[in-house]
Image 1 (cartoon, rainbow, N blue to C red):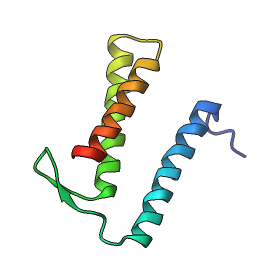
Image 2: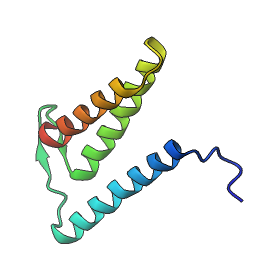
Image 3: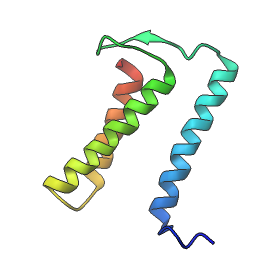
Image 4: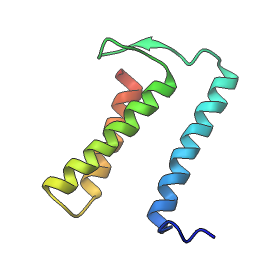
Length: 92
């Protein structure tokens, strides 16, 4: 039934991570409504969901640029992406 996609462990972990992040943000929204909007470094007023989207988009670009310019191993772009995520939720 799920043969249409290459469900490897990294692919499954990616989807579990994304859906877990969405679940955590949903729980936070239920407990603390309003999305915790704030104006950050970029001058945009962002909510938690906006910051998650910016983080995921930036992470995709980091990995694509790393694969295009360097190749393997992918531990360094993972570290850069985690740093980018922390920066986005802290300052953006």
